[in-house]
Image 1: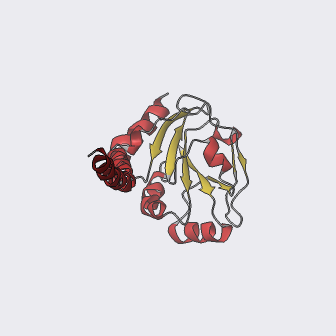
Image 2: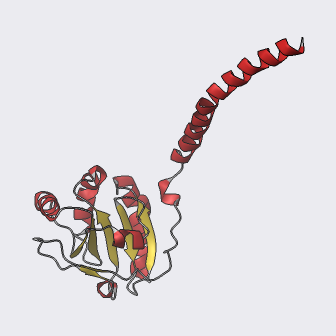
Image 3: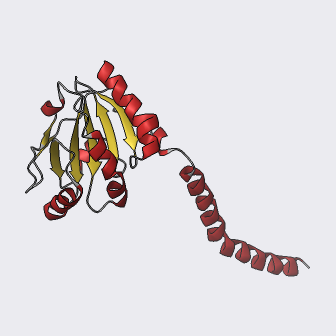
Length: 190
């Protein structure tokens, strides 16, 4: 009898082991889906309230704007937008950046992340260039220093060069009205 029980247990153990990868995969899917339901705006940023990272980005080749340096972030409220021509949400948010650029109380600066100069130049030529400064971050190193999770992201930097707010994802009419504009107004009032 014990031989039969031992032989019967072996196939059960093998069938459990065969389903184990499926059970692990299903668990990972559940964890991933729960993570997607969160608000990307609530991603923590260790840089809020701290000086902007030290950067010295050259201008995007062929774009008639200076590059981006940390020193250039002093003296005026600046929105720093991380973008790329290959980024579909960057195309979607661009009209909102063009609208923001009309407000002379602050300026826009761009970090062009891992983009070919020809592509960046075409993107800005076709859609308009809202940036007073636009630096080329070919390696992506500056974006890492800024704590960028992915393009697009936008930072509000105070007159003193301190990062006051971080907007993750594309700017939309809703996020501009409900989050970004109020943060810009707070920065201007400081």
